[in-house]
Amino acid sequence: MSKDVLKTNGDSISVAITGASSGIGRALALEFAKNHKNITLHLAGRNEARVQESKEQILLHNPDAQVLLQCFDVSDEEAVKQWCENIFQSRVDMVIMNAGVAMGEEQSAAKHSEICKTNALGVAFGSFYALESMNKQDSVYGSKGHIVLISSIAALLALPNAPSYSASKIFVRALGESLSVGQSDVRVTTICPGFIRTPLTQFIHPLVPQMSAESAVKKMYNAIIKGKRFYAFPWWLAFGARFYNILPFWLKRAFIRMFHTMGSL
View 1 (cartoon, rainbow, N blue to C red):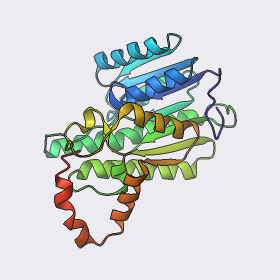
View 2: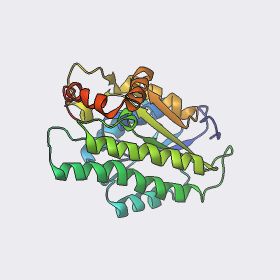
View 3: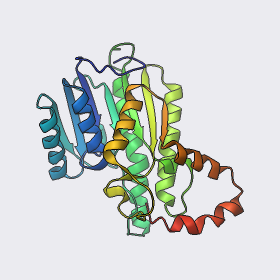
View 4: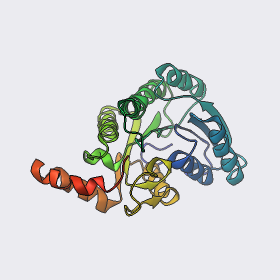
C-alpha cells in the first residue's frame, strides 16, 4: 500500500471493517472485494446472521476473497481489544471504523447513552487498539497501515433533532483530525457522508434527499484509495453545514422547525 494511494493491482490487501452486517459497512466490503481480487476481509458486526449474509454476497462477487467473521459490540472495550489482537496476528493494511447507531423512534436517555457509547467510544476503542498494532507492523510502500473513520455530515453542525448523534460524530471527526495530524507512519482518513439510504436513516423524512448506499460508497472508496485525510460529501450539503455554523445563535434557532421536519437520527 502506498502512503498516498492504495494499490489496486494484483497486490494482496487485508481490510477490517466494523458494522459490516448491513448498510455502508456491507457496501464498503463489497466495493473492496470487487476491486481487489486478492483480499482478506475481517468483517465485524453484532448480528451473526446478517454478517454471514455479507460474507455470502462478497463471495458471489469475488470467490477468491478470504472473509473472516467476528460478532461483538464495539462499545465493549475488551471485545474490541480482543478483535484487534486476533486480526493483527497477520498484517492488516486497513481498518475501517464504521459501526454506528442512531436514535430512530426511541426517544430515551438510555438510547442517547447507547449512541454515545457506540459512535464515540466504540470508534475510539477500535482506533487506538488498531493504531497500536499498526505501529508495530513493517512499512509497506512507505506506510504501516491506514485507519478510516466514518463520521457524518452531522459532524459539521449540531442537528437539533439529533443531539447525541451529532455530538458523537463531531467526536469522530475531531479524533480523526487529531490522529491524522499526529501520525506519520499510519494514514488516517475521516469521511463525513451526507444522508445515505440505509437502516440507520429509515426514520428521516422522505422529502430529505438521500443517496443510495452503492453510489455513496463508490465516492467513499475513491477518497480512501486516494489517501484523502478528510472527505465530506455531497459538496453542497457540506457547504450548507459550514454556512449554518457561522450563523448567529438566534438565526440557528429559527431553523429548528425546519430541522424537526426531517425526522430523527
